[in-house]
Image (cartoon, rainbow, N blue to C red; front, side, top):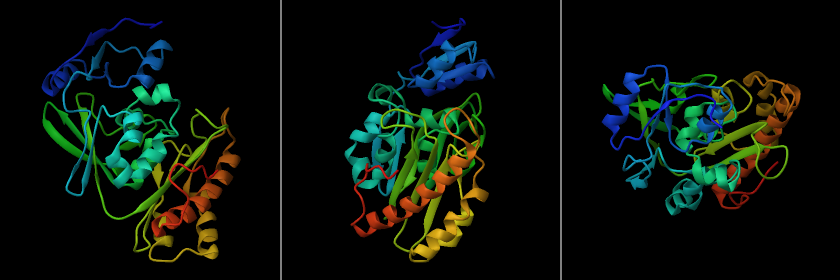
Length: 293
């Protein structure tokens, strides 16, 4: 049961959608997959005056390749990420992450863009999209703009999107790479991350290293990246960056894990993830989708 009444609009164009958003500043929510929004409405966590359902707007559910740029629309679900041949060929890390999200029923509805718009600390898409240097594209009454993913998460459940904007798509500039998403859950199956690590590595021995569920937002570690940059992996190098983890993250203790446990397991995940990512780049690492922790 929904706790509060609200108006509902289902626009068929982006200008119509942004018009509705601009008319209700601070008291409107955008509905895409709805898996987070409906739960928040049901639990009386939010009470908007208006919900704008964007599912009828065409061209927001495309996955396509434009030259060396992967384009993923706002309405693309996690299941569509998993089943996409383009993703499998050019960015299999996205599918590895998507397979860890909740349950099949949720993945059939939940969108990757909605996941980063929720901006919860444990959002699965956050660390991976950070590691892939994603760009977020939005449109609003003042036109279109782009936000680098590194500037997207501005606080707990807060993003760079303004109330009158709609995210239209994500773009990822592709170059030869491999990656890994390591997610600690309490059990096999559906669960939020207790801790998560995203890693992307390139042939020149450079890295992107990100963390989820261990800070108010998904974060990147430039310090660990700089330490790894240009070097071949070794036990000594991995031990060095493992020792940096406690200073790079700020986990909390909650019902799912203690801060101390999150810190320890994040270091373990970083260790295993680095070796797996480099192995995948060489062609002898674990298959994408293999659980490492």
